[in-house]
Image (cartoon, rainbow, N blue to C red; front, side, top):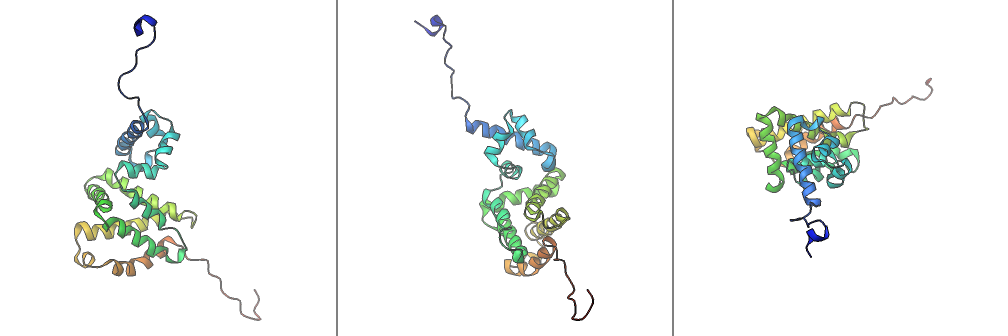
Length: 214
């Protein structure tokens, strides 16, 4: 007796769609959405709708929009981790940690630095790519500095501009004095500036002299 005789459905050929195919569909949808709308305008919900999955599934695969963007742009997870962990610890040495993290990511091993450099070179000639890269870098800094001040977004933008400018000058333009400087030299000059930008000065109070009226 055949399946047709019994009225039972025929078995489907091929493998059933699984987590790997769904993950790839999300990644493809994210690449297309980031390319068309840019980093800032792209949302997890939009990507989920494009991939015909639930937004929670996108979060299950990638955790956040930053991580989804990194995967879509082939940014190594190790580079993303450097950017995030730079904000751990006390504020006293934040500037140095951030500068070292960025230089290590952009100028480190080829597996980590080459995708970032490819993005940077593309951003120079493509405004859409430039806007995406700028927004992504600012988001990493803003995530680490949020709550420190009311103008945290401005401070994150200024810091990102300085850091990307240094990398561009060293690796793409090849400004001799910057290209020839070693990491410690750059950190010594850059870290105090980045520190001052990212960490607002504490409110200063003037000591009250003995016998004076407060």
